[in-house]
Length: 167
Image (cartoon, rainbow, N blue to C red):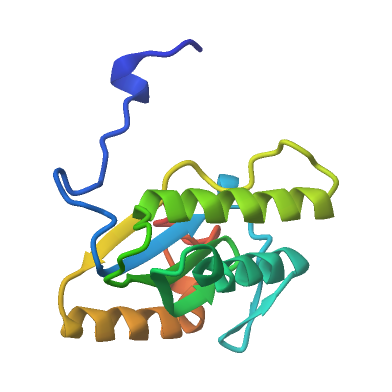
């Protein structure tokens, strides 16, 4: 099937006119290609990471080394997606955009995972990601709790492959 604008056009979920390099906190959800459950297994409400899940976590943890104006907040691996909060600080240094940070993270984790599974050039992450600009402390606290409790709710998660209401 060729490209058809009415079928293949994706409307951006980004806030039009917003500067995504601006200091602030951002809630992120990123899914594995095809929502394959390869990052680990939820056991007794905790995610036990696979080797690929460990690579993903390690990649997340190194983001502040690559982007000094980005701090990490809450984060969780799920079997087929991740949730995290990135905090962009006021900085006189280079201010990356959120999309630049996510693109770098996706690229580096994909590269390590593809080396591990001997699959050069394969996609690992779905195109795009979900983001939400965190505008106040109440929202930040709610999203931290959501991230923390997400593995406990895996069976009813909309991204669970056996959930009848999933995507």
